[in-house]
Image (cartoon, rainbow, N blue to C red; front, side, top):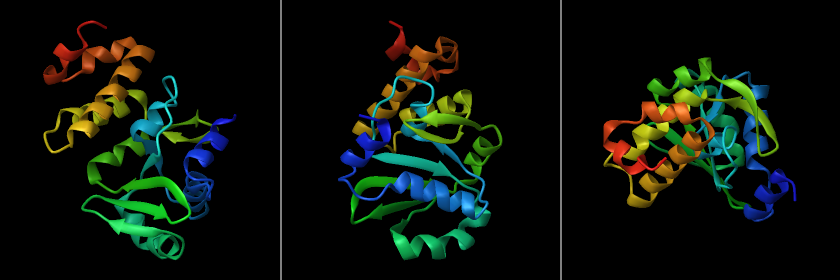
Length: 175
């Protein structure tokens, strides 16, 4: 089964939210890149996740919101938007946090589970995920998911291990 079909099946057979958001951003000429666990799939052995994270500059939110409001359930958060559809189990998280915009500039086109999209550079992606894995504000399961994403990246690119925060180094001594 092709990756897109698998994602569609896991999403409940509904619309292809990832393609819809990608196409919308490109049609509106909004710069973006993919980050988070979905982006890790561009560098490491793929793991299917029901969430895809995008980063866009905050300046484009006003232009994007009317389009999103027509098609999706939009939950505004402090530094992001969560998009869902009643026809799909997949979720789209759009980050607007100012510090993440640098990811767009260093991103490059890569294949992720059948999609060709700009993906955060591996070192930048590693740094963002490491920050999430060590923050105390994350739920325990989310911290572990982020830690596993770090392990996937380290297995694919061992030199990244040197960039691990001190607080996480003891957990990866065996690698």
